[in-house]
Image (cartoon, rainbow, N blue to C red; front, side):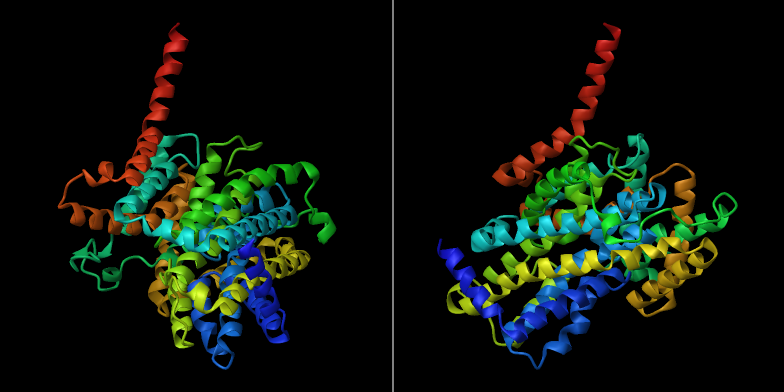
Length: 501
């Protein structure tokens, strides 16, 4: 009851003209930034930070929080319509969002699904943050390098089985993603790896151009190579909000994965270094274990819902360690932390006690930003889906421009554009050869985080494996990991035994 009273006090702080305007402005800017491939929440918040200098601390952080949160919505737009994820959490959204929009000719419903799932997942995350913020942050503290390693083992194991019927291909392509992620300077020892004598490769393969190329530019190559098969991009669809609404049956399909991923994503978002990207991957992988009306990767509503609900919930959950412990869970969180300290606020256990007006005003603003972002994102659907009505001959240069600008803006050099081009060719070849690219992208994202935590765990234990089985949380997670490994093998043996009988 006390938290509810404090939250109501937060709403009284929020409902001033300046704070409400800041939340709304942040929500709109976050949507725009999120929809632009190559920018992402980190660059968006960093670039827009100067806009808040003349605001009071509460108004400033409300605006930045709204930008960060609504960014999770915006990433789905380009992922669904162009197959170019606006940011890394939207990779999983593209896996089902683009097929639903382009192949099943339901772009409006795909966008509506993403928006509703984001709203549901975000609401769950904010509610959990409201009642268990400090406690949740303390749970996150219990996740050290060994716990994070075990959790990432589970995520990496799930990747191989996400797409396609052939798990061997999934394993091979996952290993390729890990290999590509290992290129560049070793972050712990400082020694170069697989740089082939190139100074550019010392910094590794930049993620944003890599993902834009593999997913987006490969789509351009496909359109060019197969233009004789499909010269029109026009679809028979209603370019209205009403025509984009989900049926009762569709909403029933959307609700369970949104709730599951909302809860899971919140807890993943709390973990140090995990962030919305890991949350989206875990939510999508978890949905693979549940029944879906359509196979994931073919345009399933359940896949879109699981991914979007998880990444929005993770964004809300990330505020728990930031506010209660002063520990940022991501690069974006670090920018927000810097902003807080710049305004003379010291995040930590006493923040909820010493600065209740600020803290609860921020949490209340997340509720408002969630609602306002949903309204705006649904309102722009008729304008967005007109993209799919553009003829292919005009669509190709549009996508190429988006790919080039997004790749260049992430590195401010032609190196990013070259990486984008080469990864596009690689993505096209893999797709034509029957290899799914999604596992490669997912493993590429998680590999560095896995390596860092694993090596830290071994440094703590002196190189012993005992650390993975003597710590309670780590032990439980490792048992789950082993279950993921051996379950398919056991099922295959049982199936073979039954067939012989």
